[in-house]
Length: 293
Image (cartoon, rainbow, N blue to C red):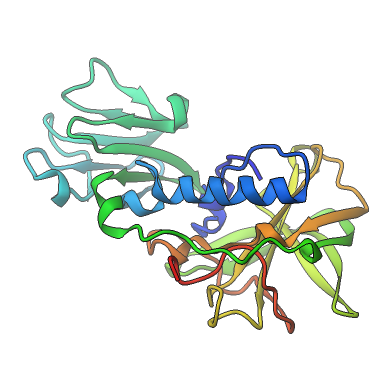
């Protein structure tokens, strides 16, 4: 895996997220990079445990942080607010942030990491979500209060599985409900035939995009016999990457990089609740739950 906005848009649903992993030499190295990247994504100053609030801003609308409030008490309020407030608007494809401390307005979508650091250590980050944007407010001080570490199953070479992918030439839109009671759309891009413990299971593969020329990965959403026991009950995700527009017929899936839906770490994410496939085996790979257990 590598840094991307997808997990925040689909698992937040999502799934910004947004789980950074460096390119590695093999499955074991992928697992090590996966663990390090997920821990960083959870515990960093703009990580999952630093989220203080999120505002969903429709085209033409705004949200603001009231001036004068204690940093720990700041929450988004709808509307443009006043001249002394921190204001974010979504117009003409720009996520504009204005603040008294800024010399000029900044388009968050063009800023480094799509974020702006505010006085007092807070940060605002923007991500595109469906037909709106999300303005994420981060407070690094929350990480010390909330983050208790993450847990993982030990690396197991049996978790590297050769599967077969059959693509759909015309990806099919699938409407889904998420954990914040919003509806969204994912695209069913094909089927993965997965051999597990002597049986073969067929799983739908998804992407947030419907244009094959722009597609460079597929997403699988699972529950299994570890769910609600040693892994997150809501589901876990697996990603497989390929050159844009060129999905291979044969896939090497590293189940050691299964990760929990991001709702396992924050209620501010929008996680799918009707796209998972139940696989009736124990998938003792990847991220465990609860954190720190």
